[in-house]
Length: 148
Image (cartoon, helix red, strand yellow):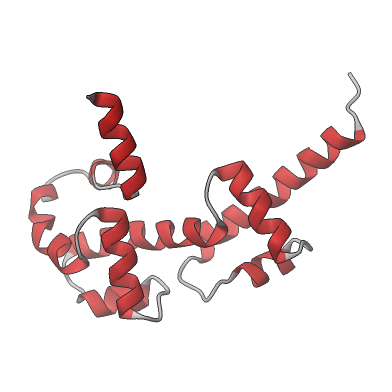
């Protein structure tokens, strides 16, 4: 079975996008921006953003922030770090931006999440991660609409 040049290019692009996603997963706590990610796979920032959104349904920045918030949730459940320490530990440089994004994804501020973390005490970490996975507001509202 032979593939067309367009199909071959699409597969190469998907492989590059996986490399970008894997880099975000590995290096979420480092300073990352779309330009640096694009440079790493020899694409323009605009092309990377468009293709990433088509492949994964969100921008590279949004994906990065989701990874950071997921890690922040785990650190907040642990309870031994302050919200500010967690903010910087996951690679955010602004406590205000971190708190805003956290609230958007989780539905409550990081300080409230930390106080409520007792509800997952005793739960296996893998289960706690799944139960407390960030859900964007638009996903939550579309999920509620489907249930009703």
